[in-house]
Structure formats: structure tokens, C-alpha cells
Image (tube, rainbow, N blue to C red; front, side, top):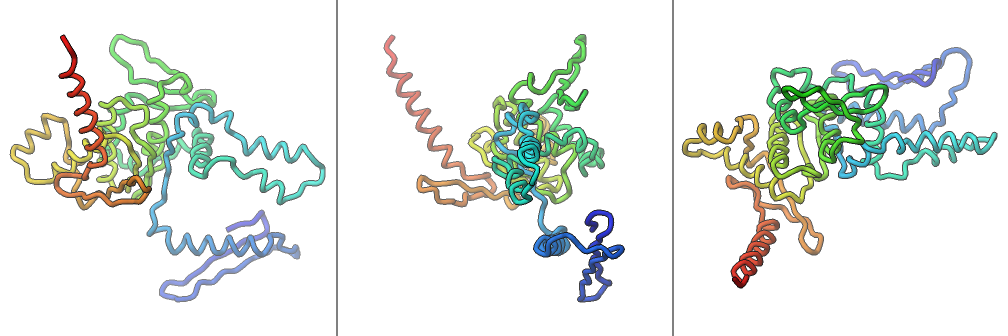
Length: 326
């Protein structure tokens, strides 16, 4: 690990040895300029990474603010503006004030989303493990394309979306700020699957159903199930009855069912999106904000929190319907 051109921090552990050697090398007669507390933090963070990097999943959070971020990310480049403002304000720069000025005004997940979109042009050159093994994980990429029906790219540093070309129609490319809200909400999910996903990674999505038509919410459930079976851990928060019902269908299909193959073909459901109850955990909040674990069995996730609301709505609808005078 290098600090500039003359300082190097070297970690070394021989195989089967219980000793980790950490050596700071300084070229020439210069004095090491990095404060001891910063050096200590670098060493601590490095040891944590060495011990846990292969054990703990690397999270990628897709926030519910993603549509606004993909629309205004150029204007949200606030960190750079703060630095310029701080440098221009005085000839005598206080390092602490400079560091404080660089702190984001946004929550960390939102700030991370801004940084990822800001660096899209460079990061989009990467290939996720799903795209590197395209043949093996074709079922994931196909499910994504079925939902998105197009692709993202940059032209002259402008993020654009190209819908799938239809027969007898010219190919269209539109700036993302002119695309539909559903396309904006899918951008970071597409970016993660194609460029950032790592084996055993953790994908966190706040409201995956955001701005999606009910039919596309069903397709989203299919995509999430396929991501889980590809080796990615998925954590979602949702208010969507459609999404949960479709996930429950995938869980129920793990049971022995009469004419199961015929049922799968009829509904275009592949074996790669079937989930076992043991693969799923579910939680809800009660009126007192207490976290409750929901039952997950061969019938899927207990959806009482949704079922009660739907039942009440249907009861009211029936009462009104049968009370209408001719």
C-alpha cells in the first residue's frame, strides 16, 4: 500500500505462520508525513479487510431516491463544488475545515448512488460475474432485458437509454432525463447486474416496484428470484402486494405439484426462479414499530399485513356495489 511515491506500507504473512508482519518503508532521508492516527486507521481497516473480505458480502444499495439521482446527478456533484468554494475562500487552508466541507449532505446510501452514477462512464467498462459467465447466467440477463427492453450507455458524457428496436421502426436513443420514470428506477439495478455484481454479493433494493406497472412488478419478482439462485443475496423493502404474491408463487412451486411442468410452461416460469422456503426470510412492522418475523412455509410468506387491507377494501367495494340504486 503506497503513500505517495516514497512511502510504502507492506503486509506479509508466511503460510502456516501465526505472525502478521507490517513494515513501513520510507525512501531517502525524508520524514513520514502521514499522522499516526491515520496510519493506525489504515492498518486497522486493512486487517479487517484481510480477515473478513471473503466472509462478509459486499453490499450495493439501490435507494428509493434513484429516479431523482439518475435525473439530476450532474447537478448533485456537490462535493467538488464545496472543495472549490473552500479553496477559493482563503489563501490559508485549514485541513479540518476542508475535510468537513467534503462531507455529504445526503445519507450514505444516497451519496453512494450519486458517486456510482457520476462514475458510470468508467465503471460501465467492468463486467460483473454474471456478464463474464453470460452463458451460465443467461436466465438472469434475459429476465433483466424482459423487464427493461433496452440498454443504457453514454454518448458525449451524456447518459442515454436505447429502447429495443422494433420491426419497421428506426432505432431510438434518448437522454435518461427524457425517459420514463420506470426506466430511471431500473437504471441502477441494470448497472449492478451488468457491471458491479460479485459472487455472494448483497444487493439491497428499497422498493423494487418503484414506478413499475403491475405486470412489470411481476417480472421484477422473477428477476429477484433468479438473482438469488445465481448466488446473490437480496434484501428488499416493499409495499407491493403484486411483488410478494409472485415471490410466493415461486416458493409454492418448490413443492410437489400435479402437472408441474405443464404449469411452468404455461406461465413461462423457469426452474431457475423457483425458491425454497429455506431461502427466504420475511419481516414486517406492527403499529408500534416493532419488527415481527413472518412465517415462510410451502405456501410462501404470510401476507396478513396485506391481506387484511385488501379484504377491507373488497368488503367496502362490495357494500357500495350492492347498495347502488338502479
